[in-house]
Length: 392
Image 1 (cartoon, rainbow, N blue to C red):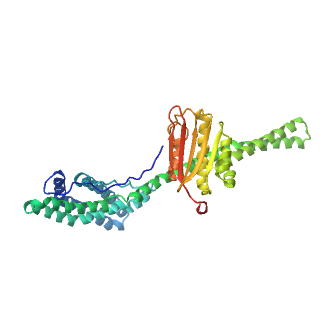
Image 2: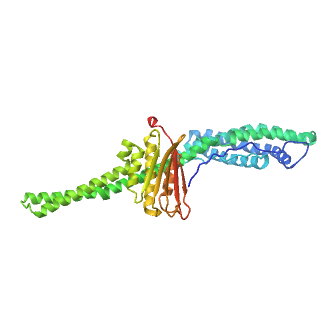
Image 3: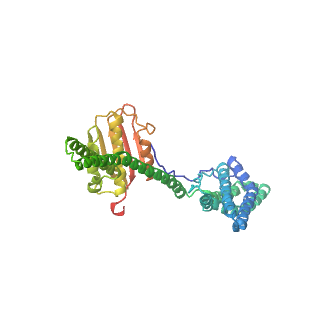
């Protein structure tokens, strides 16, 4: 089963600053004192990367050097985020990995040059040097001159550090994570489409095409015998066999067309289409579709093929006596639920196609939940975003 959850991060909870040197205060003082050497290292690194990359940009190695330098800046950002978590108590997630777009060197370099995480880290390291010098000097002086109020000074200075880390080193939560998810989902969609095309090609080659070839050969032999004046029972049998091949080929072509997109779904909607699917199931199925309007054609197709595959599983694997299909709308989502009273035990690793359904629904921002304890019953719930028909 798969779920998507958005984690809400609350504010960092730190003990209030007070006239006492507790563990958190000492962490903050240590953080401020090492700001200067670390910010100096970071500043030198990013200046070197930008200068070298810019200087070499007139050659073929300039942009790859810059892209590599931005990848190194990502590592600096990871180190700074870890330091902020350990010493400042900042609860901060790591950004999504750099998505891979294409396998060629040019594609990877261009992807690295557009990396927003790397560029924000570069900006962070630029700002950090003057700030690091200032905080080092203030903290060092306060250790000898303003000792009683140092906890308050340390808290104020590190609050500015926290703000910089959150502003420049935090992931652009939903945007960056969504981009990474869409990159992964796009690969799933491409793989699924390629697999479907291979299946259609195989079905055409091994099914209808083979039958039509046999039909053509049979009719050719019958034609030769008729031309030779041999209008006997053999010719009649050959024509009868050819007629049978035509009917089988037509049935296979209908089944193939139904597998691509059934005409009944286009013409009459989900209620009629799912009732047609249910009629082919080996167990009685009760279908309930509670929709005031039809969703977009793509959403209908997803719901149709999801139910079709789940009912095939009911027929082949469940040992059920009855099954149900329920479809309804909940706000901006279309929900599909298929249940049966079989022996249960269905899971994503059981070779029943559930893992494939999980990937397909995930690729369209859907959810897929399997509830199938041993002994049954089984309930499978699929959820996809609702899209109005007039918007496609």
